[in-house]
Length: 90
Image (cartoon, rainbow, N blue to C red):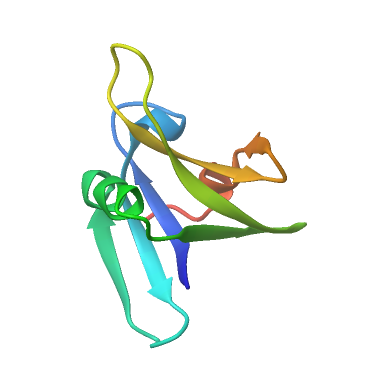
C-alpha cells in the first residue's frame, strides 16, 4: 500500500496546486517524492494511493475537470475530503 505522507503546493492553495507528494510503500518500507503528474499516471494505471486521516484512511483519486488540468483529491465513503491538504508541507 502506498501512503501519501506530505505535500508541496505551488502557486496557490487547494488540491489543484499540489505540485509534488511524499509517499511511503508500507509493504517494502521504500519512500520517495514524486511530482503530481507522475502519481496521476500511476493511479490511472490501476494503482492505489491512500492518505490517513483522523477517522481512517481515504483513497486518492484523479479529478479531471472540463477544460482544466487533472489533479489529485482524496475520497472516503463516497465523499470528497481534504485529507491531502491536512498533511505536512515539505
